[in-house]
Image (cartoon, rainbow, N blue to C red; front, side, top):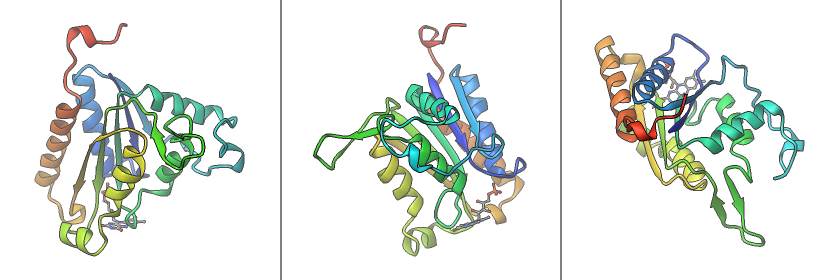
Length: 203
Ligand SMILES: Cc1cc2nc3c(=O)[nH]c(=O)nc-3n(C[C@H](O)[C@H](O)[C@H](O)COP(=O)(O)O)c2cc1C
């Protein structure tokens, strides 16, 4: 299966990078075709220009390639820290530019109801934060759940959604982080298990 993994964190030594690495390692072990983007490393340009807003607009070739990979993806993994209850701006820009009308969703003529177009069946979001669960849910109302599950993936037709928030990063021990990375691998293994021989991509 084609599994698209998107990482948004500026520090290669971050725990987010370790999460993405663990996820990709497990995908490799399971025989999947890996589509991977480290948005900071590739200097992804997040600003959506006016010219790209219309459904049938000409889009920058780099964005077109991202769109093609999103369309091909049978599964999606997103990795990012909680920054003010939101993804880092570079990832918000990826959403704005890549999760496009005609690619990920469209509206029926005259009706304000979106139709999801993505073929990916499952999306996983791995987040990190420094806020305890009670405070995140009760005071901040867990905005990342609303953004990724309701506003983005459900709307685009990806109905099987799993999100895991690792916390509290700043107070975590090496052992805790190791256990969390094991959890990442187990989660990837559960949602994107080892392929049968008949499903393996041709060389
Ligand atoms: C700009 C910025 C905004 C942040 N906002 C939040 C926040 O709203 N809630 C929170 O729990 N942590 C917040 N943090 C802390 C990060 O979530 C935390 O540093 C990160 O998850 C740790 O993972 P890392 O080691 O991979 O960087 C913020 C950090 C930065 C740099």
